[in-house]
Length: 453
Image (cartoon, rainbow, N blue to C red; front, top):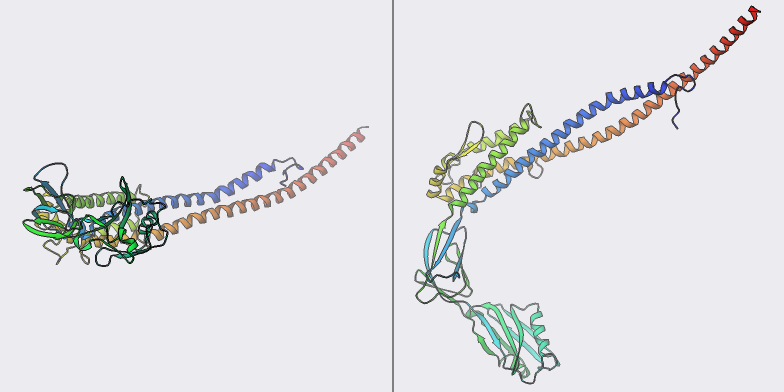
């Protein structure tokens, strides 16, 4: 329990103690507060530094992928008109520019088999036989279903559809006026994948060997610039280099689909513009952070080093990867303010000459500028990067400040306790002096009174 100093002597010792404690606290808290403010500013600055580089890294990761420069557009035109196109196209990185006339004579189809109407059969209660059904649908496509005594048509359907090694056969029942009809349909298209169903017991003939072909498995047949192409599926890859054709319907007699494959320079130009804009935005952020007067990382050597390293990478030549050897030849230049500019006319000319050679300047595995810039950026913000280590260290220092505040609180408690002990002793002495003084004063007054009588 805290004592109230000064009670004995009448002196305002409580105010004196509070003043001494406050003075001591201020002298010790101020350096902690200044240190905390500096740390918070530096943590914020490092976070902004890291964010600026991380955002730019996202763009660099696109630029380091050479496939992002192998972009093509596919335009299809159907001579018969209409909203539905018989042929769609997906373009890959190995495509080349070209025009193609395509006709679709037939689509690839899968097998559909059906039983005769099973007169007198109730799907849920009538037993259908006993034995093993074997399903085949081309090379590597086979499975069996065991039909047990007492199994119904519903049971057979459930067993077929639930078989783990079923390669793509679905079983359904149509309840026609004449009786239930069992349907087996395969999802494997192409003549070579025709579905057959056999059994090892005559009791199952109605569900196997006696089935009728409702739809015959067949191949897709198309012509490309007059050349016939056959496919087991309606997705035809590399009949045209780097192009996948997706067939939706046959073309009308005498009609055709015209496919135009062209280099997609627009997407590549957009990517390079993103690079220029991303670099300039990052440079603006780093300049703001490193501003000697107002920057959170004023005159920070790490900021200067990062800017210098990236400027050096931008200026390097890239020889032996194609007809271009520098960003300058692509219309990308670094100005005196450390910002990139883009000459669109120059870039258009380079893209027209060879889009992949343009990509090599950025994405070559050993010399590409995007690769080199990414290596620099990863050194700061990648796993184990210097900024991550720095940020972790700063956060630890901030945590240490909390410990310092706790230690200061304990120190001030002890300091106040020491003062109270000292002033309590002083208060006691002053109280004794006051009592003695009062006693002597009384004695003197008594003597003076006696002498007057």
